[in-house]
Length: 345
Image (cartoon, rainbow, N blue to C red; front, side):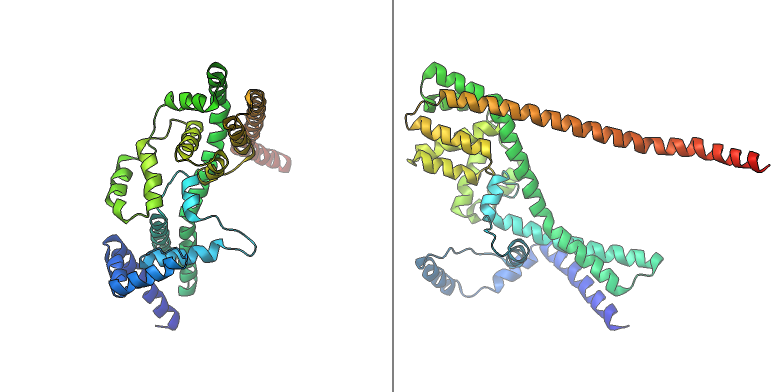
């Protein structure tokens, strides 16, 4: 047995052991045992908080995943968006940063072990070297660590596009309310009250959140409580609900508009709409400006529909060409063979 085979067996056995520990909670218990005395830890936290540092207790797998995230996401000159903000912009697909980190570690370990086991299976047929199998497991492990981040980015884009579409169809309701009532805050309330409430979490996810509720940071728990109570049946209603909630807390309209960037990825139409809301709450006439925004939104929607239609035609044409290839092979190949035999004869 050579050195590479020893490393291969060791890493494979370690990966299987970690998966078993994660599944049965043993790794978390082990990490808790490694913490210093509770009183000393609280004193250290109090000293750090007194100096303005944010204290966050993470288990061992969470710390590993966070360090990997910091290494893979940070770049020179790039201002990284806090993970909690990324989760809120994505609609909380993971209900806390700790949940995100745990899932990241689990995916990384699972994909690594899967790559090692798959490579071992293929080596029975293709004679793969242990080093190549290890590289395959490592590559799949790195890919697995990126899966939670990919899900967050995907859902962030979905919410951004969904907000633009909902704004296009529901902004006329706000304009009508403003025309009938004459006050933007009351028109917003009318739109919110007439929108159905919606909870974006499944029953299993809600039960899981309630189990971990006491361990969540206060900020996370507050955000989740809004999702669990229902915040509107569409993204436009959600935006109005959150904006009105901030105003109800005594926040200035400008600050409330700024805080909306925590819940949706900023883009031109949202920023422009929020600026109009601020002007309207401050007593300025905005009916004509809302009408102009409504017109631009519908023009943008028509442009998007035309673009998607053109893309669909291109994809259909390409798919039709691929479907014709087997037909040409079935028809032309026999004809060519017949022609060659005839000419040759």
